[in-house]
Image (tube, rainbow, N blue to C red; front, side, top):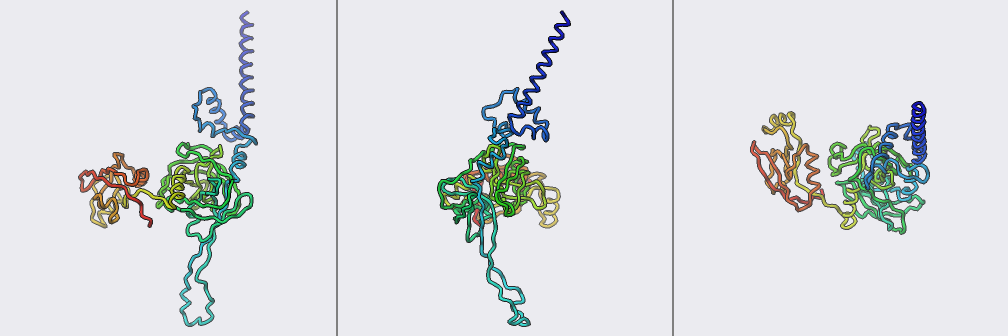
Length: 402
């Protein structure tokens, strides 16, 4: 009797193992690209099984991003088929004045000097994506900056004249309008909820190769402009390892559901596998201003600053005779005349410690704090001056156009 019980237990155990193996096979077939996951990312199988045994939240965006439902068996193909028609090629041309070489006034050459034109035409190519069926297109400002003529080529082969409704160099966002109706559009995602490791798909026209698709993941979020090497921009960039090349500028960065989450905009020279995109929430905010008024306004204090380090303190002592007692904080190097900071009483040599009762780590956090305020809002600043703590209030102004 006991032996029979043991045999029954063994049979039940083998049955459970068989059912578990069968469920894994069915699961692999069901997600379409399960084989690829298994070969390249075996740990995902364990995580997916774990997720199946736990209750999922109603808004499980990150789980959906890992294995979205597919029609073709490949979610990238589905995204490209759905979104590709709304991605466009943008050609811009601008006239640039040229200067005669120094030999032009040399009598030795006389009439043999070749006649040099006073101007030349520069041409560039970028990407963009349609956001309204009446022809509004988002792209980078540097794609159309200073352009005399802009043309937009649709995936169906049509080439139309584009009109620049507005451009914002501070965030590198621009809006173009073409005269057409019933155009395909891209659905907007939410870049504020992105997590590192989610899928990223880039579509654009790199190096003149139209309709190129690359894939990767979101490598990081919240990259400061100073970290990317474009300190004059006011953007917290998305970082991706999806291949981004010249010509991708202005094209969409998409999630696994085909929603645009960013606008591809920058690469670091000589880097491999590192590209950057403007979060779509920021691009939308700026584009709405550009469509409404033709320009975008940004909060402004009017200071030049640097993070305090022992080397900075020593250099200021030696070159300017300025003694900085604080070991941490943001040192104000210059205050623009008649700026909000100037009117509030800030001076060169002041050390910013807090903005709105929030401590500051580096100049990038100051830019972040100011960018999140509203124009006209009053900000309390905690400042150290000559070893004394001061509280000043500054009324946020509008960043000058220049």
